[in-house]
Image (cartoon, rainbow, N blue to C red):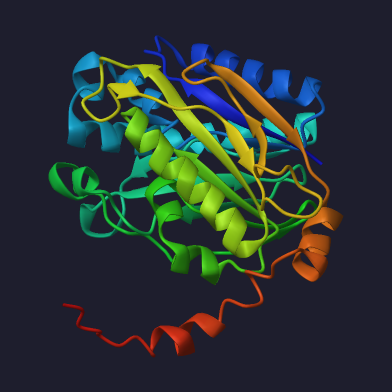
Length: 292
């Protein structure tokens, strides 16, 4: 299969038609390059708040309600594009009103057959906790698709190995991301690469890029698309299947074969995934040694 990961810039939208044209162009371009799976970034749906005007989009809490109101139409657009172009799409995530008015960070996943599911972010960054007030949503899910078993770790979630371990059966882990600084980009990228090593799977990272000075939440974003695997049998020696140019909007593509994932798990030079459980017993044997 061919994976396309986005380095996606946000726009101040003046109409729904502008958003529809933009998204349609992005999907058509990736599908035209033969992509089967398209990954948009974390908070890629923030631009929907601008449909209610700059004052609403610039207000941290009012923007959540605005995006929530537009999300059903956005989901139907994604669903139609997935069907029309015969692709799987992970849409850009959005802060959506949840229980007790505590928003959750949710990414929707669409199949060519019309199915739609979603994944909520599990662990919030300090800024998401306060002042934004984003809460953890529903637990992790493993999606069984025509492209294989797919899990989703939204940005900061990719930096926590036990979350990825819960998705140990996944062939692909999608990592939609939004990072303000170069340090943040590398934290998520290193996390995605580490999860590919531990799970002997493929991870696909998408990023927001550029300036959105109309938003308090995503005013500046640094990143690039990338696709990573274990640096082992059947994969590049670096583990990097593809890496986009930093802060350059567009798609980054990589072709993968699920057979390579099965092979490295079975016959790789190392067996991180199957040897995982050996850690617990060995970690419990740590003793303190006083050296003078």
